[in-house]
Amino acid sequence: MWGELRSYVVEMVYTCFFLSWHMTLPLFQEYVQAEISKKYHLDTSDFKKGNSYSGNFHPPNTDNITTPSTSAQEESAISILSLQIAEGLPAVVSVIILGAVGDRTGRRKIMIVLPTLGITAYSLLYILILYTGWNIDGLFMASALRGLSGSSVSLMAGSSFYAINSVAPENRSSRLAVQEFINGATYAIGNIVVGVWVHYSGFLQPFWFTFCLSLFSVFLVVFGVEEIQTARRTEPSTENCCYDTFQPLLKLFKCKDAALLKIWFAILAFQTYAMVHIGQLNTLVLYLLGKPFVWPSVKIGIFLSVGMACSALGTVLAVPFLRYHVSDTTIAAVGLVSKAAGTLWIGVIQSEAVLYFSILLLAFQLLPFPMMRAIVSRGIHPTDQGSLFALMHCAESLIHFLSPLIFTVIYASTLRFYTGFIFIVAAIILLIPAGFTLGIKYLDSKISVDYQAMEDRGTELAASPSVASSSNFDDLASLASSQNNAPISTISVS
Image (cartoon, rainbow, N blue to C red; front, side, top):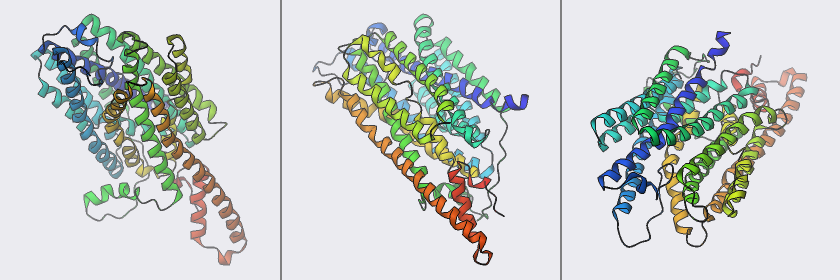
């Protein structure tokens, strides 16, 4: 029984890590805003009236008069963006290196250990700064350390590897849906907890809590997570460490067949959808702060948290049911339709009472994330999956600060003639991941047709042993593995 439970320790680590992660995001943003407001001798409550709930970017001030309040807002926005860049850029490089090294050595645990250590050091540095006094250099050090450790993208890549290799191929999508549920649920809990806790107790206690959570995740990884044994690579060594380590990653850029093209379609669909999802989430804060809604920050936080909780619940319940009736690609398409419908509803509806219906429309908006991970996992050998997931998630680190910036600029530019126009733009951009999803659907049908033709050919060759060759059956095995949603390595040809 302990063996079965131990396979889910990764999900426990995932829960502790992302609860700490989703708490530190608004915590550091509100802390930066509070300290800068003190610098300009502003009251914190008055300063926050013009800010978003999560402390992200703001439309530029149209007034020609520069006030201490606007100067503080501008400095806060620049400081927050700079801290996100200080974490995001190193994370892009780190996650690729960790994925390649993990595949080369067969030790993917490093993709989970380092991020947990990084977020622990991050919280500890903030605690030290809170005790010793404001220091922007210390904040940059904390962000850089978390980025160099791989940040959240490395942990997601490593957890995805553990999830898909701990269950049968047909259960991968359900296991990945559980991780997406955890991510959404911890987002909802973390944002509500931070809003209330900071209001009543300040910043020190919440940061101590995130430190303890992170430290517990380190304990779980070190003593509870075991390496998953997979077949080792069979390529001969060239005695060039860098080439041997990153060669499998370079192979992914050579789209020689439909299987690799399908992987790239899934990666691009994942990244473009993540760009819309993250950008829209941050712009929605600004939209609800302004007319015609003019919601207070606490109400916006509750609305976002309830919406994300419903989406997380919809994901974990829908995937186990739908996968018995439709393909993973179709399930991802359901998520795209849900996102588009909810996004257009928010952009068009101007009534507060009717706006809440968007929560139901967006109930399946998280489905594309686990589905795209499941799709790419079936197209590559397990020995290269660490590099694959690292490549899939590395751009997400950039998206976390570029997407809100891009969406906020569009929102500010279109604010004068229609406040909800940004959501119409977001719905149009969703056509890009939808196109890649249709491409995956087409490649699936093409592979299915080729498989049937190869199967018929294999039958004919079996009847005529004199013309049979091992390469024919190798092709048949490769196509069969794609058709049955199993890695090629699980097919043995005698």
